[in-house]
Length: 423
Ligand code: ADP
Ligand code: ASP
Ligand code: MG
Image (cartoon, rainbow, N blue to C red; front, top):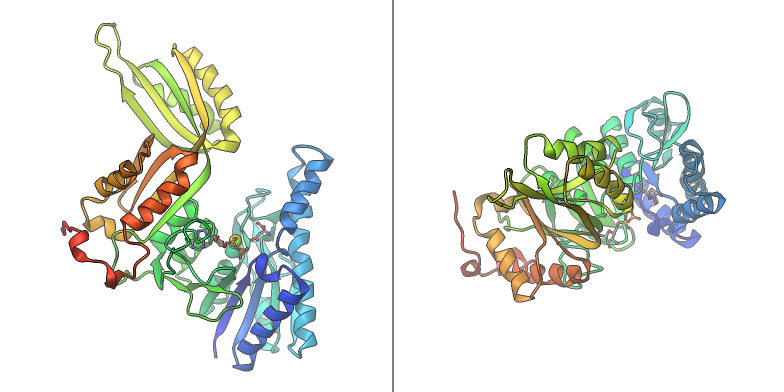
């Protein structure tokens, strides 16, 4: 007997038929004697449909009303699933976020969960019921409905698991686990039996949308055992764990994002405070800056050195960032601002990188063999990211996937091919 939190994503509850299937699955756990809290997303495509409706009313809808609108998607699913459970003899009760209550801050559209009162849920579980909770939503200190950002039902599930001290949080989706890379892009991507929180956090923040970043953050922080599984096909899925595998590969996975943009200030005087002068206004406008590159152009013929300064932002922020940058660049005597919006980021992630010296060189060789130009590079202890032209993104992911033997089981990998520089 265990207490399990199970989350079913949009595709998994995308039709009444699928909702019936989910109800049968939950019944299996109940019949075994487990206590179950279920978190559901809106039916597949519903949140996008609601966003589109709001857009039709007018651009930039008020954020409070947007959250009232978006939270309706999940409310439909909790009621339908509770009905489907009761139909097959499983006692179930639905909860919206505020009924639990899941208390969040007031940041509409990207609220953070601050606390959960688990009393009400515990009482229903003790009475033998399945609690079906709406994902993605909370209630702010001023009693307004909030939403947690796209993909936020994952975070609801993990937060509930932490609050209830559940034995496991199971994320059911349309893939049977976390793969070496998005299986929609690389057909021979391989399911991982396990991945560390640290790696999963990097994968999620570098573009793998299989889990929302905050869900992974939360699970790591509160030590919630987390597993990703297929909502229909049986299988062990992928365990996200603190333990590093004995046979740890150098690279565990490849993540990528499509929606990057690059801004460059050319010929800017290289003097203290220039990075702040250029990026300060962008930070103040709440625009997230990702990779930053500064280059000394070494023009010794002039009185002061000129430098070029490049960084990336989300493509959606490009126009605003460019406006702010042009203003700052002018004020600080830069020659010009250039930019492009056809770039992507590809990242290799793996805790095994810590003990291997030649990962970057091997990455660059694989890309060079495909004639792919690298525009920017950034590294941390467990990841290497490159920026490249978007049209080469999928080719790069496939080339790297095979260069790092990610399509092979770890024991199949010929160690001769993975020269090691153990420390
Ligand atoms: P849900 O609606 O269940 O929350 P999502 O669409 O948010 O599902 O996440 C599942 C999808 O994540 C998969 O269909 C897959 O295409 C994508 N994905 C991206 N990277 C990975 C990865 N490394 N492993 C597994 N799936 C991935
Ligand atoms: N329905 C929300 C979305 O589409 C939340 C979620 O599915 O996790 O982003
Ligand atoms: Mg999701």
